[in-house]
Image 1 (cartoon, rainbow, N blue to C red):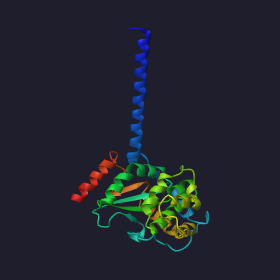
Image 2 (cartoon, rainbow, N blue to C red):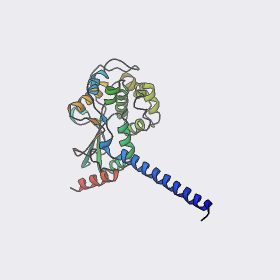
Image 3 (cartoon, rainbow, N blue to C red):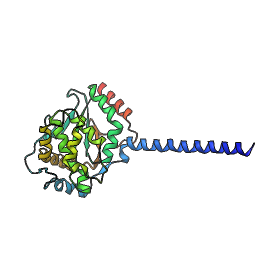
Length: 258
């Protein structure tokens, strides 16, 4: 065999090895997105203190003191759950999330299409609870302000679309961009019909800030330790190392048969 042929075969093997490694790396990234127990935003002591601290004072014109005003259609204990899907659905997915939490974005990116499919078909009802862990851990008010804006979107009947938009445009965890109401209003422009005078006033006044604080306190007192926390009919499925969107869909459909 000529030296040229040997070099050609060696180069081909090297290219194949590089391609295999890329595939393995892609698979590892995929598992990181899907397996929940390996990636969470952890609630620390600073976050417990931050539940109060992040909701005191003013930032970017947001008011924090005042009565607890639940968003339109909020349900559950103390009206802390924002429902998506049909009330008559047999199966309920409870999701505790923080709009600044990168693990929450990873969960949403991996499971969004499956959750939309199941809620649209009437097989699943989702109850979203909003949390301010990152405000407490890193400082700032982006978690709170984004949650308030999402509650304002719920008032307008646009929660799911705005919820998804916030995750699709999530800044780096250390970048408190969502503390700026101008940013939150800018993103509302991506949701048809949301950027109205009523929505802007709700965001700028921090209408639901006290409600967000109460939700964050419920998360802490509930014994939860990280976001996202995902419960299917009360069972924590995000700790399941084998969980995938396909498995979630299967579990929902099996539960609905029972």
